[in-house]
Image 1 (cartoon, rainbow over the protein chains, first blue to last red):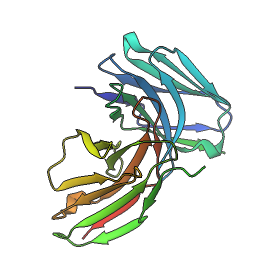
Image 2 (image 1 turned 180 degrees about the vertical axis):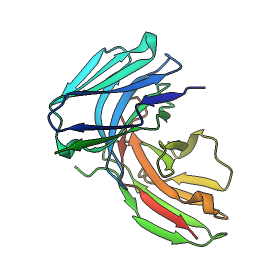
Image 3 (image 1 turned 30 degrees about the horizontal axis):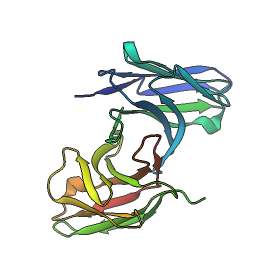
Image 4 (image 1 turned 30 degrees about the vertical axis):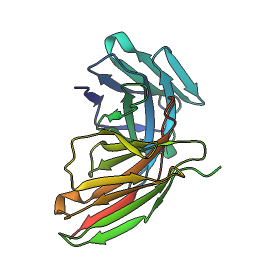
Length: 113
Length: 112
């Protein structure tokens, strides 16, 4: 059974810092990995999608890496801003077609002005 | 380009009642999945619909049922509501051939 773990559960940093969020998964047979952002009480906004054949994806100040063999992904946020405050969720898709997503518990990020 | 639309946004029901939640997928998507997210937890997979059939199901009781219509929209039905069914219900759409998910804003269900 696939399990996804995110560390840390919560993180508070001052504005301007670069930071890394971690995600690990137990079964390396994944189709893709997706990072989401969730604001309180809201739905999920997709940030980055990494196919299993890829090593990283970048969008603006965000960079996500994937090491499938070790079951790890990291989300790097450069020059953090208060607007980055949210919960960040990592999810893996196990099989093409079935496309069920298995989520981690999320990292609650607070950026202090 | 409309994303995923869910209705209603909020709902309050009494224990034992039945509820129906609705979802319209993103244009071009043919697969709809439903997730339940309890407070402070990651979303949990309920089931997935493609070609109007349930393709995969998570660890949820038969009280949770669904339907997909020819226009790809979907409904989630929950019977005999329990207090523990209180959660944010998220609908996600994708294409069966693969790719990422697009999520709706969710329906907040409160059972009292």
